[in-house]
Amino acid sequence: MKFFVDTAEIDEIAELNDLGMVDGVTTNPSLIMKSGRDILEVTKEICDLVDGPVSAEVVATEADAMIEEGRKLAKIANNIAVKVPLTWAGLKACNTLTNEGRMVNVTLCFTANQALLAAKAGASFISPFIGRLDDLNLDGMELIADIREIYDNYGFETEILAASIRSVNHMSDAAKIGADVATAPPAVIKKMADHVLTDKGLAAFLKDWEKTGQKIL
Image (cartoon, rainbow, N blue to C red):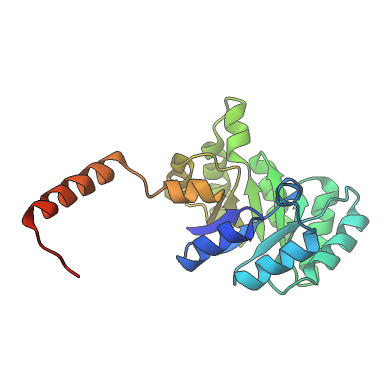
């Protein structure tokens, strides 16, 4: 499963990228606002830093305006994936931009039917929102499984990009189901390394090593 980092903070992306943990980046208007940066400037900086797709989201709601915004965003770098919402206008924009040879990430997906429409429209990525479904006492992972089954049934090339990741369990569950990509905040990705028994075992090893009085360097 590929890891995308869900942030517009350059330092956080760079830290994970140096460890080989970044296959791409996703941004949205809320993350751009949080960064306090100009969208074109920070997106260009991210694209220069990572090799994989960088999702940059349109803010228009009408198809023609989405297409124009998407074209402008796509000019930032060759690895831009234009992010559009899963509305009828968004699907129209997706189809047009895809036919122009651009990567498109269709976001805010909450049903398998929506995912099917996105694949038919030629989306490069579909972003089902796991956490927001969980907030409504619905099973976000069930949606990932449904989309996986449908896409596999018909050989759709649209990649399932599990989004709205809230926990390390979301990451492992998405991987087990077969999501192609998971996009998560840096803190969640880093927390995947944590386990109380790892900490306990390391502390025991270091205590015993100290008793030997030896040094490696």
